[in-house]
Amino acid sequence: MIQRLSPQDVAHFQKQVLSFYHQNKRVFPFRDINDPYKIVVSEYMLQQTQTARVVPFFIRFIERFPTVQSLATAPLGDVLTLWQGLGYNRRAKFLQKCAIAVVSQFDGVFPSSLEELQSLPGIGAYTASAVVAFAFETPVMVIETNIRAVFIHTFFPDDEKIEDNLIIPLIEQTLPQNGVREWYYALMDYGVDIKKRHKNPARRSKHHAKQSPFLGSNRQKRGLILRELVTNKTVSVEELCSLLQCEPQKAEEIAAGLEKEGLIIKEGRVLYLP
DNA sequence: TTCCGGCGTT
DNA sequence: AACGCGGGAA
Image (cartoon, rainbow, N blue to C red; front, side, top):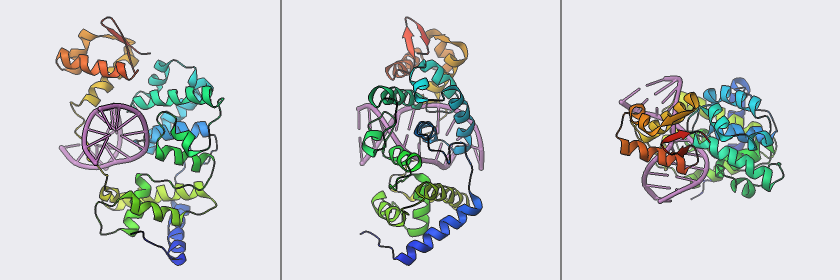
């Protein structure tokens, strides 16, 4: 069943969130701006990655690729080089693919509808709604981990396995028609604070999944290969075994995966960046 | 050692 | 619906 909030509940909640925000707001180079391209770049970087780590990468990235056109025409290797150390390298590939699509399909102008945004590679439900809310300041429902934390902590203090379908109506009911961008900044900052003071409430979300260990994982090996290529331009398949400390068959498998995703190029026995 | 979280793929 | 994907901080 859907929880119905009274106007008093809504006003009280909004005041609580906004008063926290007014005294604790975080300032970032990707906030309080309207350029959809910069919003998109920051949102790709912010997928699975903490704001503090994103900031220097965002600044360097925008300096090197100030416009969607400049990103669309760059060699992917350059993009991956700037991405080095941020993690989840395929996001860089998706981001550039997105830039190319915006240039070719939308004449270099980012679309403002959820549907068109979500059709772009690397943009799903969250990123599309975040771009609409932040770049176009349109009141749209946005849900992500910090927002989940706020609503779970506030409205489901004793529940477990909470479905988004229960949270979404509450986000919609408390969404102000004006100042949407600031509202979501406020919710996210409030959520970060809640997670600091309590055991992460988002862990009580139904779809919260614990991730497998990183050490020795394929993800780590993929990252090592990309790092090596950024540093040394090329690496041979033979060198991979000592780099990854694994069997040749395993190294081939990892490299093949990267090649299939378009993150590396394999010519003979040598790997290099696209 | 544990924690983290949106997207594409399967 | 479940899984794979980085790397740094706590």
